Image 1 (cartoon, rainbow, N blue to C red):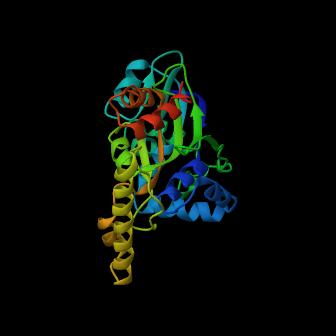
Image 2: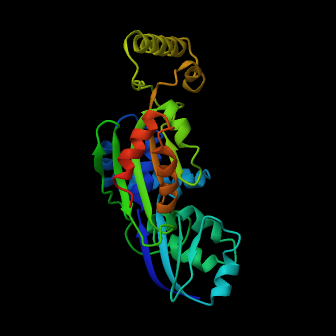
Image 3: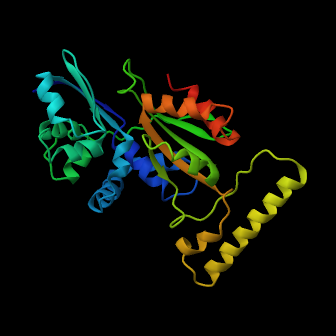
Length: 286
């Protein structure tokens, strides 16, 4: 088995951005400015990897072109459902860094090593020798103001199983609960344990109905603040916060899985908020 080509989609900068989404209120531009401090990036990624929070590593992709016996390749990757393979001359194998780490303890260890070495900083955190500089560049593009959506990765592929897209977006907690049902996608969400509430997003209802929603939500926020003053922790006080609370999500996934999301969420039966987000994403995903 011989790897004859490699391509990293994303990198340590994207993974850092996704990690910080859970811990910071506001948009992604300020987080991107933090990427100039490589030591800060390394400290945060070292911390999450050491604690076993490997889910953030799903927000990038490595493509490998492999010359091999097809039966050997299929056998070695049989039990790894998050690794995609297209057999050919050469074959294409793609995986996220989390899947690459999982391969290190399997018969496909060499493929896992080839993939994880495309991320020098993460390789060094894991004690693997790897020359080169980390990929910290993030190409952020605001594609919608309302709903607020940024494109972070746009990497289509002729075989949609190997294409990859990532987005940063804001929505209500209602919409976020619907979004995370799409389990083939990967998510990092703003955490109510470590961030304070920041605004609401309401459905398009008229007159008194909207006024009542706003009054109820603001009352819940006032109760939350009162609980904090009483000494209740943020993670416990958040129980009283309304579902209209604004949150931020970093969402990434393969092109094929985005196609599935769009088929379901652009349908007229989908709730309007998530349908509008899907409409924006559909303008990017091929």
